[in-house]
Image (cartoon, rainbow, N blue to C red; front, side, top):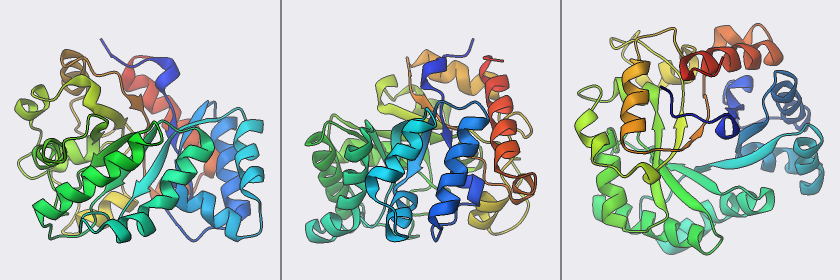
Length: 282
């Protein structure tokens, strides 16, 4: 049985514009409205999109009101980047604004990633500890996402980093694409060692175990499949999360240029239908 709860189901709506960060206020308004029209009640907001709309001439309050008027909550804000070097001044400059956006919307979860292929583990642990403190000072959880092509490529490496950083409010983003495609494939042994409350967010999408080419990052940003259309073992994944007592926010993140051709409302609708299907909420 799926451990998902309806009230924890939101959409990562950045894929509705292909994950572009250089967007206009009109594009931001479009994906907000499309999310609501497709039946979603909340979104995982890219801070980049909020900031782009403000830079395009809208007030921060107006952009926030777009969400409120559409009936959309914002429980998650993404994405903290540039922290893995561990330098406090750099982290304040690179990540402080994302925390402020999260506070502005009342989001309780802030997500981060490591983009580079090489990671100094000691520096990254220091950086993550600093993020944890910045979040704790604002009453926010901070979760880190592993990326198979990065210097933090597996759930095991990400969980070890969280443990090294040590903050009680630190946890993981569990992305099902990355779960299947991480080096070595799915790792139930590690997942079973993680307390359920440390899985803050599950991003749902699908893929094939083999992949479509050599560039994992490009495939991940352009050709993810809807939940249930690939080779992710959904009953197993959900059973494992249920076993450890996870009660995360569920947020599909389906970057797919083909789906974009149908328009943002239809893409958001298909994403909702597929997600509810694999979670047993249909």
